[in-house]
Amino acid sequence: MEAMQFEPMSVGRIIDRTFTLYRNNFVRFITIVAIIQVPIGLLSVVSNSFLLAGISGETYKSEAAPESSETTELRSETDSETRPSAPREERANALLAIFAAIGAVISALLMIMGGMLSQAALTKSVSETYLGRDISVGQAYKSILPRFLSLIGASILVTLVVWFGLVLLVVPGIIFGLWLFLTTPCIVVEDCRATDGMARSKALVSGNLGKVFAVGLVALLIAWAVMIPASMIGSSVALLVGPDHMMLSMFVSQFLDMLGRILSTPIGAAASILLYYDLRIRKEGFDLQMLAQSAGPDRG
Image (tube, rainbow, N blue to C red; front, side, top):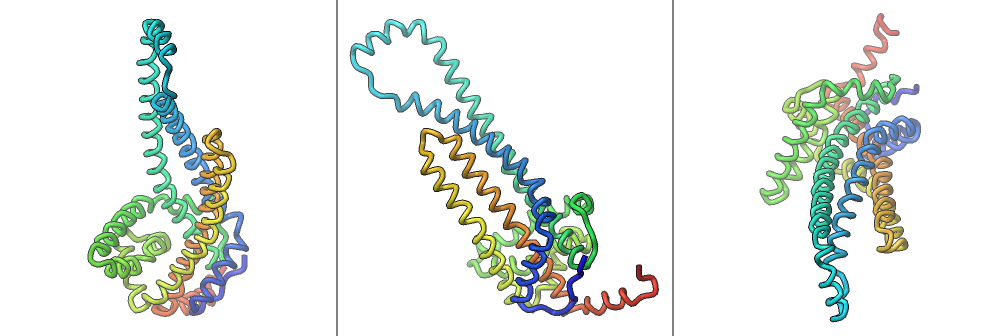
């Protein structure tokens, strides 16, 4: 495996190396995301399908065409026979909708947690690749599992801090978000706890807010450039299929959204870890540390 050169990088250089890492390790990076996102995405599709089926059953009854007087008379004659089954059908639809809603909530929570897990594993994989070390998909996940609670805690705390800052006239929230931009790399690479990772991120980012903003913005725009076309294709397919095949259109739409997320997630992870090492090189002489290690007597 070819290691990257340890040197300070401009924003353009970070983005260029991001694509280099992405291209050279495409299968591994995509597998890391897909192994989590695909099962969760399928669960979401199934729960949403049941939810749609329950809603469709109730809607069909509520939007039925007006009956003529003759039909009403005939219906009144047979009400005694059909009345017992109607409540059972309504209860079945209600239970179906409830179970589907619970499944949707569970799949949403799993998607959030799975996203954090795959992001951390990607960060570990990109970091090891940047340092010139081999790492498999299983090794990446195994290495970050002991830090998973710290990652969850950090995610919650970062979200609260950023939202609190946004309430304070928006700008503080943006600054807080930039300060904490490297929390995940700090936790994964340096084995920090949640609050220590946040403090470490702020220490690295301080004095470099403009650069962090630029890298984050470019990475976000690139990710959108991947996700938005996938979403637009899904919407177009839904329009072509029409309302008569809502299940199929929903499946295609969610599948393409999932595909867009899988393809775009490694971009942000690679950009953030390269930015992390760039700031360590500038502030802490990380490149000199790596040079000293490579020249040490215990090399190999």
